[in-house]
Amino acid sequence: MSPPTARRSDARIDALEVRPYKIPTATPESDGTLQWDSTTLVYVEVRAAGETGIGFTYADAATAKLIETILYDTIVGTDALQIGARWNDMYARTRNLGRGGITSMAVSAVDVALWDLKGKLLGVPAYVLLGSTRASVPVYGSGGFTAYSEQELCAQLAGWVDDGIPRVKMKVGRAPLADTKRVTAARAAIGEATELFVDANGAYSTQQALGLAQKFAEQGVTWFEEPVYREDYAGTRFVRERAPAGMDISSGEYGYDLYTFSRMIEARSIDVLQADATRCGGFSGLLAVDGLCQSTMTPLSTHCAPHLHLHAAMACKQLRHIEYFFDHVRIECMLFDGSGDPEKGELAPDSTRPGIGLELRRIDAERYAI
Image 1 (cartoon, rainbow, N blue to C red):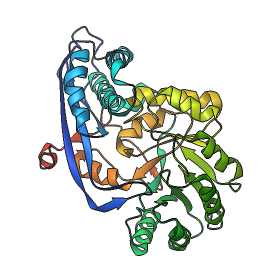
Image 2: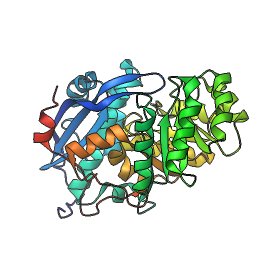
Image 3: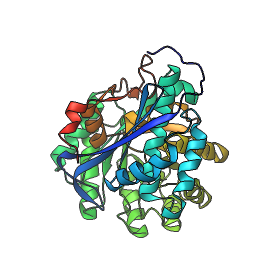
Image 4: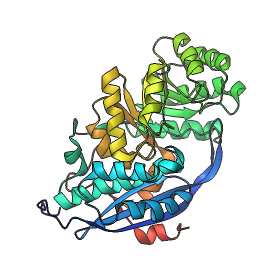
C-alpha cells in the first residue's frame, strides 16, 4: 500500500482515458424480456499526482464517447479530491442530455474512478474513506438464465450452495407456463435450507405475476424481483399488497436518480429497493440512495457488478446483500486483479489494497477491446 499523501494543491486531474471492451458470454443468456450473447464493459482511468484511479460500468460503447468528450472537458484540470464537486459538475454539464441512461452510467464510471483515485492518493481502501459499517457483505448467487436447460439451471444454483452461498436467484418470465416447474426443480436442487429468489425482469402482467407468486410461495420463494414492468408502480404495488407473507417484492436496478427511487418508495411498491452504482451515479449516488433508504426504513440491495460494489456496499447502512451475478463475476475475475471469492456467503475486501482494490489486467483485456 502506498504511504498516505498529505492534502496538496497538485492533486489535479491531468488525464482521463476510457476504453470499451465487449466480452462474449460463456453461453447464450436470456431472462424474461431480453436475450444476449455478449456484455460490454466501459472502463475508465483518471490520473492525478502520479496515481491512477479506475472505474467501470456495464453499458453500451456509446457511453465511452460521452466520457472521452464531455466528461473529459468537465473534470480534467480540476481537484481530484473534491469528489462531490466533480459529481455536481458532471451532471450539470450533461443536463441537456437527460439524467438517465448512458449519461448517468458515464458519470457513474468516472465517479467510481475518482473514489479509487482518492483512496490511492491517501493510501487507504475506499471503504475507509466511505465509512465502513461492516467487515464483509452477504451475497446471493445470481444467474439461472431462462436460456439454461433445467439441468444447467439446477447445476448452477446447487454449485453456489456447495460454495457456501445460502441464497440464490433464478430468472423467470420467458415461458410462464414452465416457470412453476423450473422453480420446483430449483428448490429440489438446492435443498430446503437455501433461500430461493426469482426475477421476472418485468415479463408478467399483474394478474399473471400474482398467480405465479402463489405458486412460487409453495416452493419457499422469498424474493420476487420486477414481477411487472419496472415503471408500473401501481402494478408492482398491486402484486406486493397481495403476495404471500414472507415474499419480498423488489425493484430499482434501472433507477438513475433519487427522484426515481423516491417515487418507488412513496408508491409503496417494493419491500426492498435495489440500486446499481454503475447506473445511479457511482459510489456518490449509491450512498445518497442509502440515505433515502435510511429515512424511510427501506432495506437496500445492490445490483450486479459485485466486485465494483463491494467497498461502497460496506458503507451502506441499510444494506441487506449484494448480487453475485454470474456474468459480471466471470468478467471481473477474468480481467481484474483483486477480485475475490465469497467465504461463507460473504465477500470481503483486501485491506492491503488502496482504493477499490481492483487493477485491470491489460493483456487479458486487450483481446476484447472495441
